[in-house]
Image 1 (cartoon, rainbow, N blue to C red):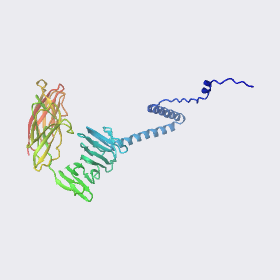
Image 2: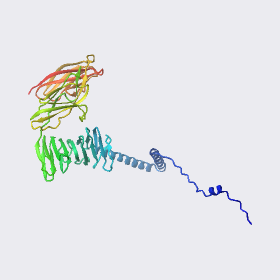
Image 3: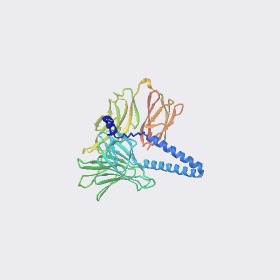
Image 4: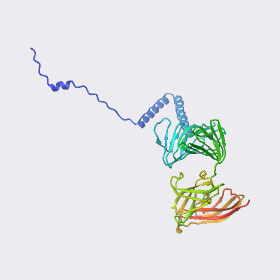
Length: 430
């Protein structure tokens, strides 16, 4: 008889345990992978060089040419794609192959099918490869519909407005067959070169309109076609015919000059004088001041019946201003061009040297001769004086002036924060 020792339950349980499998891994970054690839390529090139120098030379040139061709192709693609050149407020985009809205930035390149949406008090300016510019106003949704901007060929760019408004400006194209358009509902407004227009789509009021401010455009809707010239408008609603009409032209701004500094000892209480050319058929004007180019916040607004306004209560700083005209039928013009000025607080201890030695007319161009402090900056009628000698003397030629009397303002600032202003009168004969 065989006697067997009793089995220990602990050992029995241990003998039936499943074997353990342990897995080890190491995290490798993309940078490390690239380094390893470069090392392998360098080793291969070294082996090729030792075996056959001629084969090494051929292989090296093929690799470098491939890399250069890829870089050139990427550069050409980035140059022909649309991109943002101005962003203000909340601007979002949704790429054609994405379902997510993201915040736009200056690195973003736009492709056909991409959506751009601006929020309240926001705007975005988009430039295409052919130089065409679209300014997307606030509360607007647009889609990039065309972007054919290959070099040495006619270009074709277009956006569609789902809701809101867009301003369009075209350059002087290298090819006369180039096209730039804004599409709204079932209509397309195609601008000619060196033209500007404003296109609006308001689905809630069932109103669409295209206004040409410079140059000309062609508006086509089904079998209808309308040619528009400066300050003409095409308007329509769903199911209705297109209507062409004249619009009130906005006034031309006169003073303050664009980019001009205004120097006051007491800027808060000293009124700033605003002036513009009277618009035909206008009975009133609305002048607006803002600290942003999009006029998100209106600092001052005044409605007047003359072509001038004096506004006080402004703190020192940079401002933007424009004017809208209104006729007897309560129809408003497009907004005028926007000018910028800087309000500077001037103390007596900050005076600087600025003297005008003489002026001379050369046809319709005025020559201003004077002297200031070395290293100072000067602005003559909104234009920067590029050449100031080491001793402070300067000589500046203005842009051609219209016949009549002109007051030329010379404004300077030095490195100590001092400012000075001089004015001279010029009469240009007819």
